[in-house]
Amino acid sequence: MQPLLKKFGMKGSPMGIEQVREFLKSWGKDKEIIEFDVSSATVDLAARALNTKPERIAKTLSFQKGDVPILIVTAGNMKIDNRKYKIEYGCKAHMLAADEVRERIGHEVGGVCPFGVKENVEIYLDVSLKNYDVIYPACGSSNSAIKLNSKELEEMVKPLKWVDVCKSK
Image (cartoon, rainbow, N blue to C red; front, side, top):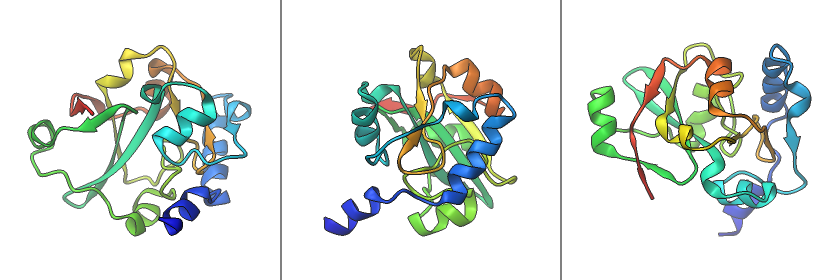
Protein backbone atom coordinates (compact mmCIF):
# COMPACT_ATOMS: atom_id res chain seq x y z
CA MET A 1 0.00 0.00 0.00
CA GLN A 2 2.83 2.43 0.79
CA PRO A 3 4.30 2.42 -2.78
CA LEU A 4 0.84 3.20 -4.14
CA LEU A 5 0.45 6.16 -1.77
CA LYS A 6 3.94 7.33 -2.62
CA LYS A 7 3.12 7.08 -6.33
CA PHE A 8 -0.04 9.15 -5.94
CA GLY A 9 1.80 11.70 -3.83
CA MET A 10 4.18 12.50 -6.66
CA LYS A 11 3.72 15.71 -8.57
CA GLY A 12 4.13 13.99 -11.95
CA SER A 13 6.26 15.07 -14.82
CA PRO A 14 6.90 18.83 -15.10
CA MET A 15 6.88 18.17 -18.85
CA GLY A 16 3.25 16.99 -18.66
CA ILE A 17 1.89 20.09 -16.98
CA GLU A 18 4.03 22.35 -19.18
CA GLN A 19 2.65 20.63 -22.31
CA VAL A 20 -0.85 21.23 -20.96
CA ARG A 21 -0.08 24.83 -20.02
CA GLU A 22 1.14 25.45 -23.59
CA PHE A 23 -1.97 23.75 -25.03
CA LEU A 24 -4.31 25.78 -22.80
CA LYS A 25 -2.49 29.03 -23.66
CA SER A 26 -3.96 28.92 -27.17
CA TRP A 27 -7.42 28.99 -25.52
CA GLY A 28 -6.52 31.73 -23.03
CA LYS A 29 -6.94 29.21 -20.20
CA ASP A 30 -3.33 28.56 -19.12
CA LYS A 31 -3.69 30.84 -16.09
CA GLU A 32 -6.79 28.89 -14.97
CA ILE A 33 -4.89 25.72 -14.06
CA ILE A 34 -5.41 24.95 -10.39
CA GLU A 35 -2.36 23.41 -8.68
CA PHE A 36 -2.73 21.74 -5.28
CA ASP A 37 -0.37 21.12 -2.39
CA VAL A 38 -1.94 17.66 -2.16
CA SER A 39 -2.38 14.86 -4.67
CA SER A 40 -5.32 14.84 -7.07
CA ALA A 41 -4.19 11.64 -8.80
CA THR A 42 -7.45 9.75 -8.26
CA VAL A 43 -11.08 10.79 -8.55
CA ASP A 44 -11.54 10.76 -4.77
CA LEU A 45 -8.33 12.71 -4.12
CA ALA A 46 -9.22 15.28 -6.79
CA ALA A 47 -12.75 15.68 -5.40
CA ARG A 48 -11.30 16.27 -1.92
CA ALA A 49 -8.71 18.74 -3.22
CA LEU A 50 -11.42 20.67 -5.08
CA ASN A 51 -14.06 20.27 -2.36
CA THR A 52 -16.52 18.89 -4.91
CA LYS A 53 -18.36 15.66 -5.68
CA PRO A 54 -16.47 12.82 -7.42
CA GLU A 55 -18.86 12.86 -10.39
CA ARG A 56 -17.63 16.35 -11.32
CA ILE A 57 -14.09 15.05 -11.82
CA ALA A 58 -13.50 14.43 -15.54
CA LYS A 59 -11.72 11.07 -15.39
CA THR A 60 -9.49 10.29 -18.37
CA LEU A 61 -9.01 6.58 -19.10
CA SER A 62 -6.32 5.21 -21.44
CA PHE A 63 -7.02 2.24 -23.72
CA GLN A 64 -5.45 0.44 -26.64
CA LYS A 65 -7.72 -0.09 -29.66
CA GLY A 66 -5.78 -2.20 -32.15
CA ASP A 67 -2.61 -0.19 -32.80
CA VAL A 68 -4.16 3.09 -31.65
CA PRO A 69 -4.09 4.52 -28.11
CA ILE A 70 -7.36 6.15 -27.13
CA LEU A 71 -8.57 8.32 -24.29
CA ILE A 72 -12.12 8.25 -23.00
CA VAL A 73 -13.06 11.11 -20.70
CA THR A 74 -15.96 10.25 -18.36
CA ALA A 75 -17.65 11.65 -15.29
CA GLY A 76 -15.78 10.54 -12.16
CA ASN A 77 -18.60 8.36 -10.86
CA MET A 78 -18.76 6.24 -14.00
CA LYS A 79 -17.20 2.94 -14.95
CA ILE A 80 -16.60 1.51 -18.44
CA ASP A 81 -19.34 -0.90 -19.50
CA ASN A 82 -17.51 -3.67 -21.36
CA ARG A 83 -20.53 -4.55 -23.50
CA LYS A 84 -21.05 -0.93 -24.61
CA TYR A 85 -17.32 -0.52 -25.23
CA LYS A 86 -17.23 -3.60 -27.49
CA ILE A 87 -20.26 -2.38 -29.45
CA GLU A 88 -18.73 1.10 -29.89
CA TYR A 89 -15.17 0.10 -30.77
CA GLY A 90 -15.55 -3.44 -32.11
CA CYS A 91 -13.07 -4.89 -29.66
CA LYS A 92 -12.67 -5.80 -26.01
CA ALA A 93 -11.63 -2.97 -23.66
CA HIS A 94 -7.87 -3.16 -23.04
CA MET A 95 -6.56 -0.50 -20.66
CA LEU A 96 -2.97 0.58 -21.09
CA ALA A 97 -0.62 -0.63 -18.37
CA ALA A 98 0.73 2.14 -16.14
CA ASP A 99 4.20 1.89 -17.71
CA GLU A 100 2.72 2.28 -21.23
CA VAL A 101 0.69 5.41 -20.52
CA ARG A 102 3.51 8.00 -20.64
CA GLU A 103 5.00 6.48 -23.78
CA ARG A 104 1.70 6.12 -25.67
CA ILE A 105 -0.29 9.12 -24.35
CA GLY A 106 2.32 11.64 -23.21
CA HIS A 107 1.26 12.02 -19.56
CA GLU A 108 1.99 10.12 -16.35
CA VAL A 109 -0.66 8.07 -14.57
CA GLY A 110 -2.43 10.37 -12.11
CA GLY A 111 -2.22 13.35 -14.46
CA VAL A 112 -3.61 11.88 -17.67
CA CYS A 113 -5.86 14.36 -19.44
CA PRO A 114 -7.01 15.08 -23.00
CA PHE A 115 -4.80 18.19 -23.32
CA GLY A 116 -1.36 18.19 -24.94
CA VAL A 117 -1.35 14.48 -25.80
CA LYS A 118 0.67 12.79 -28.51
CA GLU A 119 -0.62 13.24 -32.06
CA ASN A 120 -1.74 9.65 -32.70
CA VAL A 121 -4.05 9.51 -29.66
CA GLU A 122 -7.79 9.37 -30.38
CA ILE A 123 -9.97 11.25 -27.89
CA TYR A 124 -13.59 10.43 -27.06
CA LEU A 125 -15.90 12.14 -24.58
CA ASP A 126 -18.50 10.07 -22.76
CA VAL A 127 -22.04 11.49 -22.57
CA SER A 128 -21.87 11.20 -18.77
CA LEU A 129 -19.97 14.52 -18.76
CA LYS A 130 -23.04 16.33 -20.08
CA ASN A 131 -24.84 15.73 -16.77
CA TYR A 132 -22.77 18.40 -15.02
CA ASP A 133 -22.48 22.14 -15.55
CA VAL A 134 -18.92 22.13 -14.17
CA ILE A 135 -16.27 19.42 -14.58
CA TYR A 136 -12.62 19.24 -13.57
CA PRO A 137 -10.15 17.39 -15.80
CA ALA A 138 -6.53 16.96 -14.70
CA CYS A 139 -3.83 19.09 -16.32
CA GLY A 140 -0.89 16.75 -16.87
CA SER A 141 0.27 16.28 -13.27
CA SER A 142 -1.00 14.44 -10.20
CA ASN A 143 -1.81 17.72 -8.43
CA SER A 144 -3.63 19.83 -10.99
CA ALA A 145 -7.02 20.45 -12.58
CA ILE A 146 -9.01 23.05 -14.50
CA LYS A 147 -12.64 24.09 -14.17
CA LEU A 148 -14.57 23.74 -17.46
CA ASN A 149 -17.96 22.79 -18.81
CA SER A 150 -18.48 19.96 -21.29
CA LYS A 151 -18.91 22.36 -24.22
CA GLU A 152 -15.56 24.03 -23.48
CA LEU A 153 -13.90 20.63 -23.17
CA GLU A 154 -15.38 19.55 -26.49
CA GLU A 155 -14.22 22.73 -28.26
CA MET A 156 -10.72 22.43 -26.86
CA VAL A 157 -9.95 18.74 -27.40
CA LYS A 158 -12.02 18.20 -30.56
CA PRO A 159 -12.94 14.59 -29.77
CA LEU A 160 -13.60 12.16 -32.59
CA LYS A 161 -17.09 11.88 -31.14
CA TRP A 162 -19.27 11.67 -28.05
CA VAL A 163 -19.78 8.07 -26.93
CA ASP A 164 -21.98 6.23 -24.45
CA VAL A 165 -19.70 3.52 -23.03
CA CYS A 166 -20.23 3.84 -19.28
CA LYS A 167 -22.38 2.57 -16.44
CA SER A 168 -22.65 4.04 -12.95
CA LYS A 169 -20.33 2.55 -10.35
